[in-house]
Length: 508
Image 1: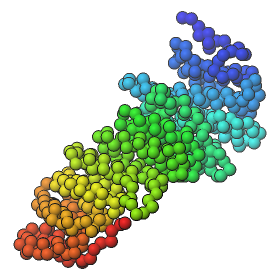
Image 2: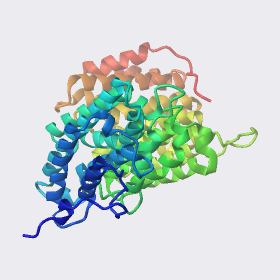
Image 3: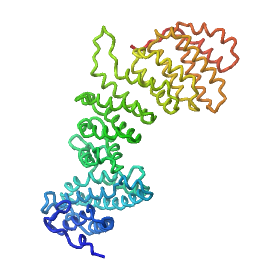
Image 4: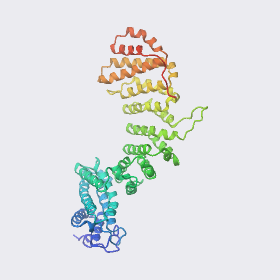
C-alpha cells in the first residue's frame, strides 16, 4: 500500500491548499487538518476521520492565547483559519441527498454530527476560557468567524429530522446552548438580530453562509439547508426583518416553487412569515406584493389540503397589503379586490370537491373570506348559496368540521347582507330544518358534543334568519312545533320561537 503523502508532508508555504494559513507550526497543523476535511482524494473518508482525531488532540494541547493568536501570513491569522476549519466541519457533518437514499446513510450522518459536535463544544470552551482570562482579546475575532458555521451545524442537527438521532440532537442542542452562552445572547432571536439596538446581530452572516446552498442548482443537494433557512427566518420578526427582505424573499419563493408538496408548504410558510413581519410599504415597493400574490394563487390549483391551508392563511394576511394600493373614490361600484378573485376560485373548487380533507380545508377558511369582504360578499351570493346548501347535506365524519364551519359562514353571511336574505328564506329554511332533523336522528358514531354543537349552530342560524325576515320564520314554524315528536328538534324550534325580532346590523 502506498503511504498517504498528503498526511506525511506538511503543506509548503504558497501551496494551493484550501485557505492560506499562518506560518507558525500551529497554523501549519490546522492547515493540514483543513486540507483533509476539504480534500477530494479517494481515501478522504479515512483522512477526515483522522483529521477529526488530530483536531481533538490539537485543541486539548493548545493554550487559548496560542489558539487565537492573530499572527501569520494570512490576513486573518488563526481566527480566520479556525473559521475555515469550522465551515469544513459543518459541511462534513451535513447530510446529503445521496445519503438519504441509503438505509444506513442518515445513521452515518448522525454519528459524524455527534463527533463534530464534541469538537465544537471543545472549541467554544476554549473561547469561553479566553474570554474569562482577559489576556487574549483575539477571542472576539475568532468568535466572529466561528459563530456562523457553528450555528448552522447546531440548527441542522438539533431539530428532529430524518438525519438526526437522539444522541446527535443532544450534542447539537448543547452546542447551541453553549454558543448562546459564549455570545451572551438570551435567545436564538437575540443571537440573530442582536440583543440591543447597538448590536448588529448575525442574521446577515448566517444568510451569507447559506446563500451558496440556496440557489436553483444547489438547494436540494443538502436536505437540511431549507429547514435551517426556514427555522432561522422564523426567529427574526419585526422590526428587524425588513432590512433583509432582498436576501430572504428569493429563497422563500424558490422553495415554494418546487414540485414536492413538502417543499411547497415550507416555502409558503416562509412567505407567510415575511408578509406578517415586513411593513406593507416595503412589500408594495417594486411590486413585491403582486409577485407574492401570483405565486400563492398558483398553488390553489394543487389539490393538496396542507398546501391549500397554508396558502389561504397567507393570502388572508396579504390582502390588507394589496388593498392599500386600491383607492375607491365613491359614486361608482367598488373595484373587485384580490379577495374577491380568490373567493371566486375557492367556490369554484368547493362545488365539485369530494375529497373530505379538502372540503374541510375550504370550509375552515370560508368564514374569514366572508368576514373580510363584509357586505361585498353579496357579489358571490349565488355561488355561496349553492356551496352552503350542498355542504350542509353531506355528513362530514365524527368531527363534522366542514358543516360546523359552513354554518358559521352562513351566520356571517346573513349578518353582512341581511337585506338580501328574505328572498332566500324558503331555500335556507328548508336546508336548516333538514339538517336539524338529520342530526337529531343520527345514530352513527358522531359524539354527542358534536351533535349538540351542530344543533346549536343550526338553531342560531334559524334565529338569525327569522330576524332577517322580520319574524316570518316563526309563523312558518308555528304548526310544525305543535306536531313535532322529536324532543331535540322541538327544543330547537322552541328556541327559534323565543328569539327576539329585529334586523341585524350588517357590515358595510
